Each structure stands twice: as structure tokens, then as C-alpha cells.
Image (cartoon, rainbow, N blue to C red; front, side, top):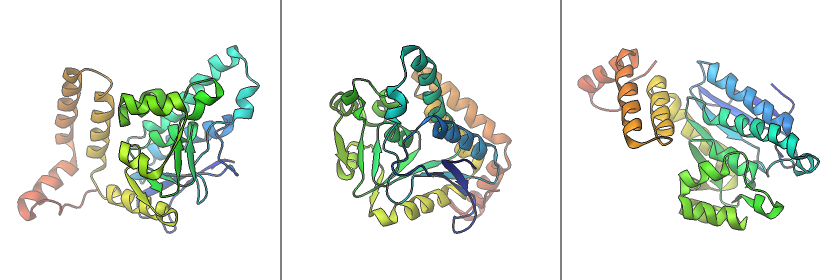
Length: 261
């Protein structure tokens, strides 16, 4: 698809699962070109009805070690006022993919790489992976969602600890604080993520999209606003064939037997 990001389907991947793969060795640093290719990949998998779940993967050795600091270092305030919005919006495009998304993380997920993983619904971590938001060590703060998505995931105090200190955490601590969901040997990261995605790919696509929207958008407002959104999305699913299939299957055969189209 692009020089640094490919969207892969078929082959050994389960049906309905696409992989957004970063390929900018050695560390998958998120330069401007890679950011734009991530945005394009998000648009592609969102618009492809055959894609039912997505894995974001940086390869066997590293997920992404952060933004391209050499590129950043040469920019002044006026340039960054423009580019900061682009950086943030490129990752937001991934967060808004209306399908289950799993980040498969090996090696390092630091700075922008950690923020990239935060856009996913779930994170599978290698047992030797290192996580962190070390931007403070450069005299800046996370600029692609770290100050917003991280506290929503792990809580305010834990997020401030990681952001204020810039320290790295290992996979066990990341699991303990809720930053990651599964820790497996490095060799099993990608296959584990694919297996998780395959389960979601068999589910009701519209209901999964509605569930994701209700949770993600509901957290951005008051409880009352979230409940109104939930009610609207809940009612809208009664117009879908999957709702008819699911309920008919439940009545006839019990839960978990439906085959959704």
C-alpha cells in the first residue's frame, strides 16, 4: 500500500482479519510519511466491508519506538502548531476504525509507539516488550493522545507517573496497571493477536461497531449523554439482519450459536 505501512489480508490470516503492518526499520519511527500512511490504512480498512477486525503490528523485533526525533528537532513553533494536529489526527483515524482493533506489540512501544498502541481496543504484549511515554525527557509532553488515552485506560495517577517520569515499564507492570491485556512470549504475539481478531471477525459487525461507539464516545461526555447515546445505538440495531439472526438462534439453540452475516 505505502512505503512504510501495508494493509495485508488473505494468506495465513483468518478470514475477515486485516493487518496494518509498519515497515520502517530499524525502529518504525513515526515520521510524517508513516503518519499519513497510517491514516490511509485506517480509511482503507474502515471502508472495506470484508474486513471485520484489524491487527496493528510492527514486526517481530519492534512495534514502534516513537516519533522521528530528528524530524521534530528541526521544526519551530509555527511548524509544530500545524504538524501537531496532523500527528494527533493520524492516530485518531486509527482509534475511530469502527471495528475491533488489536495491537500486537513486540520490542518497544515508546512515545508515539505507545500512543499508537493506545488507539487499539486491546493490546497483546511480548513478555520482553518495553512500554513508556518518555517525551518529558526531551522537554516536551506526549502529543498524539498519550495525555488523554493513557489516563482513560490506566487511571490518572498511573498515567501521571509514566508521563511525569518518562520511565519505561516492562510487560508485567504494563499488565498489572492495565496498559496491556495479554502477555505472551515474543514469538506468539502476532498469532495471539490474529486469533483474538478472528473471534471478533465472526461476530455481528454492526453491533460491534455500535458497542465501540457507545463506549468510546460515551466516555467523552456525561453519564446522561452516554446513556442517551447507548439507547439510540441499542434501538438502531433492531433494524439489522444480525439482530434477527442472533435472537432467532438464541430462542432455538441457546446463546453463542448464531452465524452472523
